[in-house]
Length: 253
Length: 224
Image 1 (cartoon, rainbow over the protein chains, first blue to last red):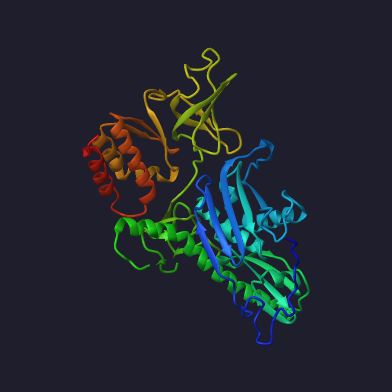
Image 2: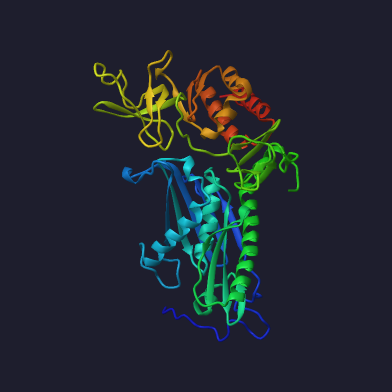
């Protein structure tokens, strides 16, 4: 069957609802799970709206090729990859301009949170695999990778939470979906290391004036705080389950 | 100085970046941020002892330290070096003297060795030139998470004592997470493997020694 992208007539209707029925400040449903891969040192699966993102961490491990090793800190490598079946139309497998750029952007967002100087001469390899994409894969990828890093037992200053903010007409919307990403006016992904409010990723695609920008930034901060709460819960969950199994009884947590 | 404040309970699960205390002494895996708060740098268990705040890791990799006792498996013998797998991102080497090319070792042998030098860049250098070091024969090599080594040994060796006395086996736990077992029989080996798995999974819940001791009793008294 031929796939035709269809532009909706209006991105926000007269009741102020978006194409998927959300209000401007409503996020898509998010589910996070850690430890989904047995053979990786750390892993996480994030389901965020229509996104399905798998992150895996290997390391700290020996660097190959050896000449890439850094004497004073760990080498952080990121591969962001979209599966051929992740997009509405089949995507040619392999790295392209976009995924190379996103790998770099994700690496910058995460590297600042890792205590790289604790692992001199070693490599930390981060794999972000997009199984299904629905706008905002880079922020979902950062969120998943930061969970996987924590699960792998890598020393970090804090978790990195990320979220995207969009603009439709003059309305700032939170967490744009596929239609809003395609035909919206602006899009601003943000990643924050929440504990010391350090912004590790800030991009902007499309125009925003100064007041819109500051509204988007403060909205982005509060969204990242929500994401951060979910991340903390997801990391604790497996231990709570084991504890319940051992101690028995229903200790409501 | 401000009055010390603590925001976490002992043995509570902490997350990287979580605020733990203020005005206390930072211990292992704890860092101090620019406002003077002690924060965890790992996913782990908080440990409060006196004025000191530590985080016990729940998962880790082994990074060699000079003078650590490690157990390794010979991977390759070539030219002037012997390559040893020490359960770490780094493959270790033993450089034997000229007149004794392979020190009587073969690929697949298990050795107890000491880390002689490691600078983070080149391979860690091991030595066998101390009393009691060298090849270990007639044993089974098991692997655990290096973060769990202190749990398997227990307070003043208590957990290790339970394991070895109940199963009548010789057990050696090295810093790098390799465990060498000389089992009495098949059943005791199975019991030890089961117990090690439980220790790794449930070490964050108190009463571990009692549970392990009960588990060993049930397995060892059971038929077949």
